[in-house]
Image (cartoon, rainbow, N blue to C red; front, side, top):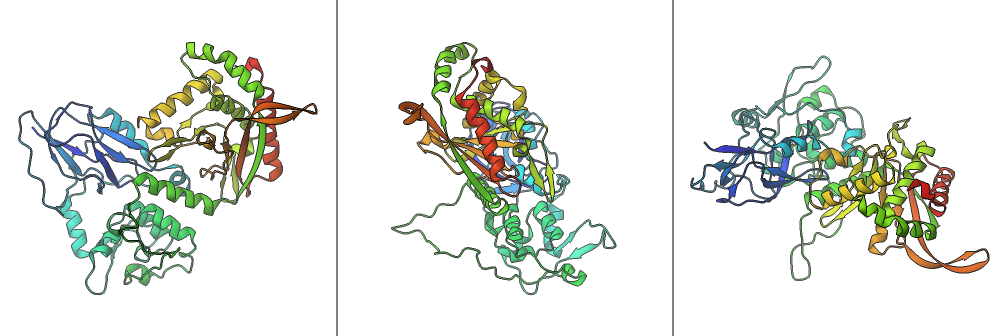
Length: 480
């Protein structure tokens, strides 16, 4: 009996998913739990295993396409079964009546908690799970009558909302109106007309990043819409781009390539960070002479224990101690309130071919140097092999990034929201330094702290970096 493969739900507030790559082709034999295709989340590219064994007889969704969760994306048949003909282009894909994302897919079940990135968790309220049993007929009926039932508090709760658009509705307008439930919810809460926003999603669909950027820009500010205005949708209003520039077209001298899903999410997060936090930087030069000697002395002991003693691990150990001593650097802001975190969850930035990912070491302050060394090596290996679980890139309270591995003297990184500080590690190079009025050659490193000036002042940053500098230059062998 054929087995339907569905798009797994990547969290309660996520209503759709994008297929990045098909690992198997039509006609290939697949085993149960064997990687079948790859999907993209906010930060993690997750491989989805097959729900059963057999032959991949049909692929319903192409690479790069975005479909609702629980939609059938492929069919697995028994051995010897002929592959189905390719569906006509534009054919409607119906959601599966029986969600199978977590059935027979242990890795997919873990990926269900991918939800959203850290900024979504802190900026947005909880969203109830999308209803997987919603039939295709209901969706068609909704499109035909142009109505959408919305649950609201107050006198208008439970009312039937009818969106009326003058004249024929274009395909692009329909795409925008069919944005995800999360996007529509944000629009309602901020009194934003989705049709005013220029979407960057598939076929002009308005994404979460689009509407957050629109709200952050202040374009949504103004008096609340009246009840009549909210009941009747207005004709689409052309929205000029916020940063006009030349419209490049493919030609002899240019090449236009669409962003990957990961690149888009990184771009959204970086713009959000730049708009949210007034960034200030302090840079300290640190003598790594003693640290280099101790590392060389203890390196073989750590290798025998199954760990790599890297400078990153040594820096991480001191950073964790500093966060415990200066809790404001491990905090975050919630409106006018300061949220002090009891846990120290250390993010370690890992460069991938397609972008940057920040896996998180939870409860880093409970680990000794050996434990941190093992954890850093583990998350780096699994990040590069796309084996991270979604929850492993969430919940960080402070981040370390290392532009020095690419030869940078130092870097000025953007804060990983909703955190309030980030440490950049520059390249370790031998330089001439003055010691007791004599010139000596020592390995040195520049550490840069980027911090949110709304919460952290220059004096706080100076004390924090001075603590790190002193500990690194006088590292106690007993800490190893």
